[in-house]
Image (cartoon, rainbow, N blue to C red; front, side):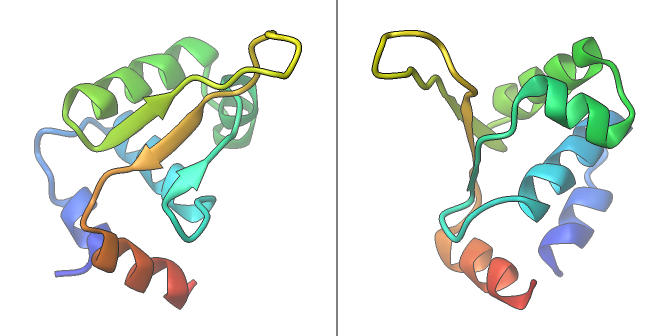
Amino acid sequence: MSYFNEIYNDPELNARAKQVLVYLHDRANKDGESWYAIGTMAKDLSLSRSTIKRALAELIRQGRVEKQERFRESGGITSNCYRIKVGQAELTDELSRT
């Protein structure tokens, strides 16, 4: 079963969480990481910032995504890094096809 079929067929993920997970996957680097801000994701997906936050919280709670806070050299907060947590070989294979 492909990675996307696993997402689409997962009854534990709601529609918004699936949408955000596919978005993160689509924009991830070869290590499964992306740095898009909440506002950017909300705009790109035509969802509210609150909906994005709830979807990310659900993905993190289920262990699908790992969140790492990032900071500027001055100590200010910048966008978080979101890493998709699946088997590394599976993710690398999926990302190399795109």
